[in-house]
Image: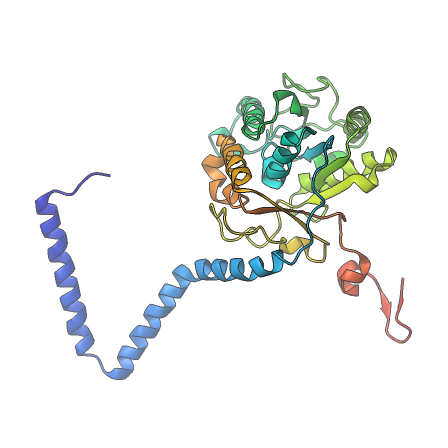
Length: 360
């Protein structure tokens, strides 16, 4: 930061003196009612500017008490085989950086399956309207960043498995393009094309993606599977949940599923920025889920921060959001959506007959 010269300090002090003197003169000339109105207006401006920070601090304080009452996640066992489904590079470290590192240090094996390479984030490509070629280059960059993030956690390079399906296109693959090939409006691709992907040339169809996930689950034989909850606000995360649950069900692995939420609604998580001594609280969109907390050591928190910072293309734009996941714990739910009894009838879409309390 450039230091001020002596004459600049003199001008600054003179302006400050004149401003304070004028403010005092005006204040003394006001009636008491006018002074109260000025104070009320000043307090309103201050609250408008700083209110969200006060709310975030209050929210963090209340959440701390709630989180510490949550049950603990069963710790990783020796020989644990953890498989993480990540819709995009960086979701894995946000949701499970601490858990993945713990499994690796306990002698277990971790495999991270990236369904997309994040090739639709236009601003991360360097311009609001990037070319398809620029977005393809972004995908390659994000794949490199993902490997560096895993290395920061102490995981080997072979822990990453890139499938190369279209960013912002997983939901259409699950619905309208389960059989018909999908063309990405961002990259112009219709099939897996990036070097380093697991099965180059596979068409962008939901059927191909589901078959690939079944193949990966069958070959890796995971003891625990992490995937997004269908309650996550991002459509790619929702589709990853659907594909993952279907693939696990085909192999009878439903009891090994564990769910996380990244896009949890209402500015989640608050406060933004780096707060490693605060707890991560259950997201608003996950209300009613039976959350379990996984406490992290100070070293695990530092490793997770380094892993997140490895995603430089995302940190440039979303640093305060990404670093807000560097907390003293991580959260997982054994259920994808709340059990029926945890919700009000109208929230789950049940029709209730008031006379007999029947639900249908």
